[in-house]
Image (tube, rainbow, N blue to C red; front, top):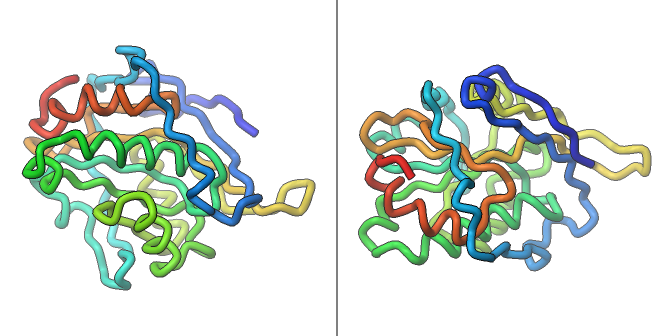
Length: 217
């Protein structure tokens, strides 16, 4: 189930945000992920005229340790995505696309890049669950969980809407969340580029060499 909405911050960027409701049919098995390829649209990135401030989020990482997003990613190129491990489609696809694209970077740039996955379903996504799921996609990715309202406030500061996990009419647990990836500059620590769920591996691979330097794609 998908529906379109416009968040205030995204209006500034003239971008349509999408909310996606993901079911729990495959219990988060990342083997169901499909990496979208193709030649890339050339228009996957929306460069924001008014960049976002990096969310002031202090959550828990996959090792059970406190993780201060601003402090830990300061000065590093950073990609942030809000989703959850039980998502059967867009979340594993997005993260798999990023995993494939980041492997195309030189090792030094890949090590400098921070890819952060913040769960929208903290009730089920424990640090251990997040760690297991991300390890199957890319062990270098950072997974964060914590209080839902804290996560929700952080997402809203980026113009991304998320809702509490709930049962649908069939009794399945679903999480409704925005599907955008936000890129933060290593120069300013501001979120200046937005990607929608249609972004492909080629889109990310084409743009990442610029993003890791804080340049516009």
